[in-house]
Amino acid sequence: MDSWGDRPMSCLNYMDAVFIGDRSYSMIDMGEAPYIGAVTFMEKYKNFSDEVPDSHIHVEFISFDDKHDVLFSGSASDITGEIVNDVEYGMTPRGSTRLYDTVIYAIREQAKRVERYKDTWSSEVRKLNPEIGVSLTVLTDGEDNCSSTTAWQMRLCIETHRKCDAKCFFAAANQDALRVGEDYGFNRDSSLQIGSNPEEAVEAFRACTNSSLRCATQENMGYTSAEREASCNPFDYPYNEESYDEKIHQHYPSSQQGYSEYDSEGEGEVFSGKAVRC
Image: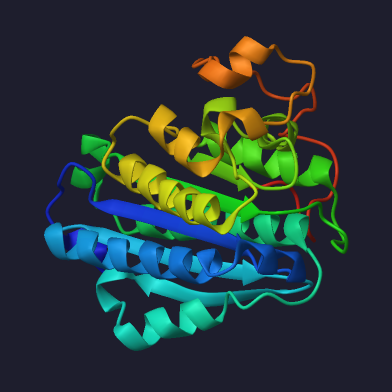
């Protein structure tokens, strides 16, 4: 078990950042972007941990096709060049798209880590009610085609995770990312459209890393207008019955979207167990 509970409290003593990257075969259209994105995420969190040595920053990088692989899970301070190379190689495109199962697995594991960390707090620390920075980022380029769970079950987990103050980000190509993100339970401001060329895909990966880091430092959440424009030409956005003016000028609502009408506290088995409890 981690020993971080004995450390003095800072603004954010504990941060937990998970990146879930699609490596299905269709990702080959993104060129070098998945590799560059993986390296950027790992290196930025390593550098961030060096800048705030009094904080515990847990980083987990998961890639998936028809199965998922946890390429790294540990303290950001332990990230080495060899680990970065392994994560980079782990994004090599292959296989199908097991999105739902992978996201549900990652949420459950992240929620358990946060609870284990809270268990290390002394009564004095609990009275301080310290903030915890928790972020989950999902990047994909297609629909799920081989999970044993469903989109509805994944949505229950995402909504429950968000209710427990986790910041959840979504980025997608080859679909209407804002609409699909909402369907999956993500906030519209936290969903990002990825364009049709490798350069835009590189920018999308970078935006995902930056939004996650802003969450860790309690800065402005969501993707910026500049990040949206760099990740996808506004003229290439899917219309989905929304106005031309809205698509071009990025007039997306800033308020948090309502939760699903489904009761996330209740019914249905989710990935060999109930929906995540925080």
